[in-house]
Length: 142
Image (cartoon, rainbow, N blue to C red; front, side):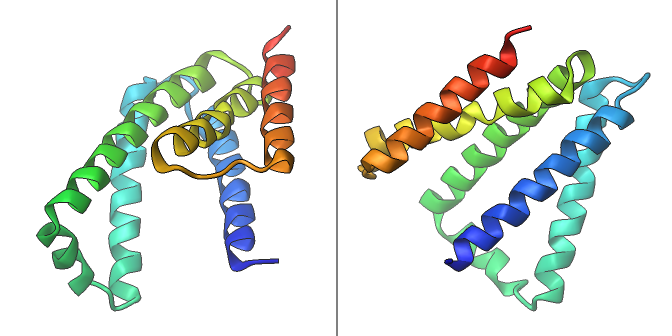
């Protein structure tokens, strides 16, 4: 088992908590305001992580690489848009449906990585991606 898999599983567990905490927290409040507050908390938390790790100097390195900064910025905008719609979906839908449909991003990311990054999709990966797609369709149905 590679370290990437451990991190990915921890990410999945944390993402599950985002859905649960978000659904409870969205009662009687605006989802976009909640997303904005969440984003500020995330930014402060991540700055703290960088400081604790002693990697503050890396912040300047990123600003110095225009191409990398541009793509990191685009990633940030895409993340903000994703969370904006995710919290809207959570406000009006069930976690058991919104969460799995959100994971269609896995399928879209794999297709985009294949098309634009030249990443290979093995037959086994293809089966997994197909099963995720089927799962998303099944959970979206009433």
